[in-house]
Image (cartoon, rainbow over all chains, first blue to last red; front, top):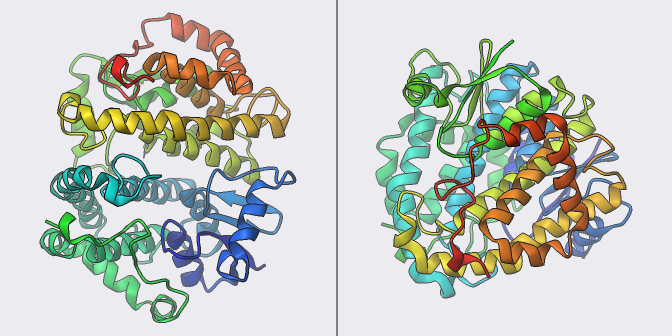
Length: 236
Length: 236
């Protein structure tokens, strides 16, 4: 089966967590909104009266007749199908728990540049962004990365749950990459205390399919429209 | 089996979504942190070296040997066990997708009074809170409730997925109740356009076990420590 992924074509954003899973799995998929009039197709499907389970927002994935939205939910669906999550319940719940914690991190990383309103420009909330970013880097990013470092230390494996990566490891790679892009100075400092997390980043980046993906045009470069944005004034 | 729920004893917060599911199910559970030195027990378990799947934060649920964290993940676990979610995959994913959308709403509702930092007092971010709350009420709350109204209209049932409530309906009840408490004026206006959502609130409130729970001391009253806080100056 060929999946259809629907997400904003200009950014990595939340869609990237799904792209990484599909790429690592070697799954056949179309990144629909990146095609000709793809955004139109995305809106059309999202608003179609015929859609039974309508998404609130992209990303969403079409798998045959099934339409699944919410990033972590899409990964919950894909994981066991492609060897990116355990099949048994306790393992599945644990990987999903880690993914939902990453999702919380992603909201907070986004809100560093949009603390007041996602519908306003960064320039209209720059002062507030400076305060929020400073708190995020000092208190929140360190707490989250410290947590994942601890999970890796307790687990004793190279990846979050074992010797094999799950979709949560692919997502951990992505938030490390995003933080390095958005806050290079602050992240360099943070990384001194998270060698295991940084090692997961490197292991994921070296996986043959991921390495090929990252080197391809399918990987949209980081930019100042997505979740992880580099504004020098926000980097401590 | 008797569940053990661990969550902050002073607030409804995210734990309330789990409490509502346990109460509606008539499940046997201890609200551990509300007992003597319960918060101590909560931290002890959370930080114990013996815990294999450590939570990032409360709430978490102990079910025999299993420890599950992240609100939506706990509900994913409880749902099919207690008739609060379909057992088949497509239905389970759909209910979880709705729950994750409610979780997004909850973050935004919380951030109306804490747009800069959760570690700072409201008084230290009051000016920013006014801006964020105004945007939330104007652009975001209406979008979310409009979405759930549309889901109900498309489904054609009394509840989000069918004639029977799922944990997502219980959670929808909770966000309506929370919004009525936090923003009574703005919510009264919003409700003119969401009769179906308001009807779900009422149906849930009338369910015998929920009604008994709401009338009991187990239901912590809304207050200014939780997610939904009433600050007159933030209500439009």
